[in-house]
Length: 464
Image 1 (cartoon, rainbow, N blue to C red):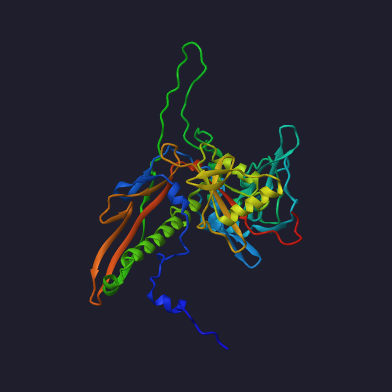
Image 2: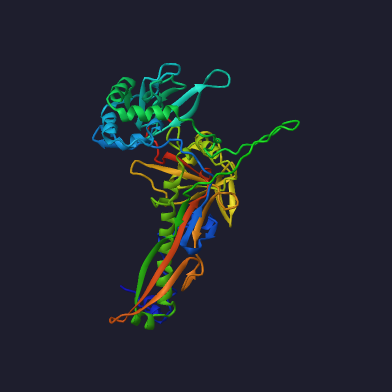
């Protein structure tokens, strides 16, 4: 038997109650640390020019390959990244050289080239990591560097006097390489007058004096006595400095006048539509600052400022190596949350516990006192590989800076405008929402990138 109700039910009572509502929520909103941490510089005229001392190209680029199934071929024009072939543009000869490369596989720990032996081939690393090994301070073997995809060694085999291997190269992981023997180079050289002439010039031209960063040297004298003749000098500049043009992200926000007129209590409909639209534009802005192929940080890091991890996951040793690249006033690391978690696992394995720093009430993990901020805009590949960035910031520190322009018409936020576009015949109000931005790396050593960061968990039963 059902008991008779003696008071007003809650379902009926709700008809007289006022519902408390939240503002519209959006899951894609993130902390956007990069936008908060970058110092923003006014780019009047929509352009920012980075003037630098003259720097000589040293030819330490990345070689690109074409993969067809299990077969790998080098793109002929990419052979111009090898220092002896820099500037050489005979397509037929480059194609002939590319066709003579032989694909080889090396197992982890297998030696590719032995120090002291004659340089008998050019080696291009298509996939994998190779340790560059030399003698340590006390005569034992020491890993002097790690070379990854697209790197190369043995390019002196292109010259008539090849020399000897200065280091031993040993596969750290399973490697796929392309090799061109010195004998094949000799045959191609004998049949190409242009190649012989170019290689002779590459061998005979003396390199201009430069410092360790490749900049034109400034002649100085110090520690002298008496009245010696002091060297004369001047600071040479790049003749064609890079210019960064402000990029733009835009959209047209549309709101029906009926909605804007009638449905504004307790929240302004236009304001909420605009708020979420601006949030989406700011998210796209941060994505572009990292990934844009023209000015994004991942694509504009100097090749000498990119290093691969030694074993896959980001270890304390890898982070220290990255700090050694950006050692002058490093401001912060930027990493995908999964990369930060992978670094934490590696620290836990070693019994190391990174410290934290306080940033506006947030406890942020840090390494050697440099905070590690999360950023989900850094891509993670399907295989679970990502990158970690480390940068120095600010114009005074010759670091990384954000570029924008304030004072634009109909400015709603710095560098962002909301422009009324009118009402059409369907009674729809339109607003043009625009944000202008870019990012500049003032000197190459202001930005370092740790590549090939494995963020996936090791498979069950795999070695720790």
